Amino acid sequence: MRHIMNALDLSVEELDKLIHLAEQIMETPEKYTECCKGKKLATCFYEPSTRTRLSFEAAMLNLGGSVLGFSSADSSSASKGESVADTIRVISSYADICAMRHPKEGAPLVASMYSSIPVINAGDGGHNHPTQTLTDLLTIKNLKGHFDHLKIGFCGDLKFGRTVHSLIDAMVRYPGVEFVLISPPELKIPDYLRKETLDENHIPYQEVSDLDAVIGDLDILYMTRVQRERFFNEEDYIRLKDSFILDTSKMKLAKEDMLVLHPLPRVNEISTEVDNDPRAVYFKQAQYGVYIRMALILTLLQIKI
Ligand code: CP
Image (cartoon, rainbow, N blue to C red; front, side, top):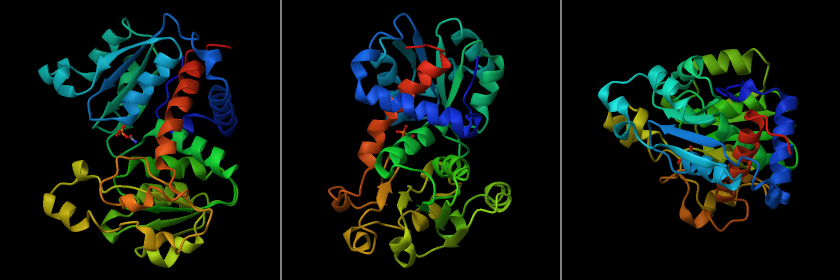
């Protein structure tokens, strides 16, 4: 039995296999409609979600399985003080696999220690979001064709943006990848990521605060929202929330084949006028999330086609 807590829990070879399976599912979805008949997915979401929870549920339903779960801590016995460890012990007897989102870093890892079914981290605080990373990788693979020798700009809240942390972790394993980290000084990537991931692996990167100055160099621009829910005070959030707004004038400075990704939800950081630009692929990216989660469920449940 395997759990997925971090994108790095999968080797590059396993990741390739998973992406290949997702591509096969995209090509012939009808082949997979009964693969999980009789299997149940529990979605235990202690924090709000639209895409992650619903794409997990859509994935399991597409595979012929069923879903159960809760979408907020308030609607579960966590509100009465139940621990994550006790909750997963019980859910292990109700379902075959569990996707868990929690505001506390490490909570899904704790769950995995007490679980007798595979647990997938569906986002833990400001830490990691491995299935978003798998979604991002499938998007890049399908729309760029390769992972190596890409210059990727991450823009916005790089401190609290867990999708950024997970994607940096995953991308440093490919040759020739470079990062441009675009944020206000207060929202730079955490020190541990700079030291342990970028510096130790000798990855070229620059930290800047001016998007216009660097957008023309990028192959991928990964926009993020400023994560209001992780701020200690509202004043700081208000001061920083509109630090970067991608609009058509900025897009004119970008390469013709630069892709704009965003894990969504978007607030103000991408003007809606950009949505019709063929380089804006964030809604397509959300669609890829279903296919990669189908592939992940099949893999963790060890279902062979
Ligand atoms: N990308 C993402 O995690 O979206 P949700 O918060 O809606 O799940």
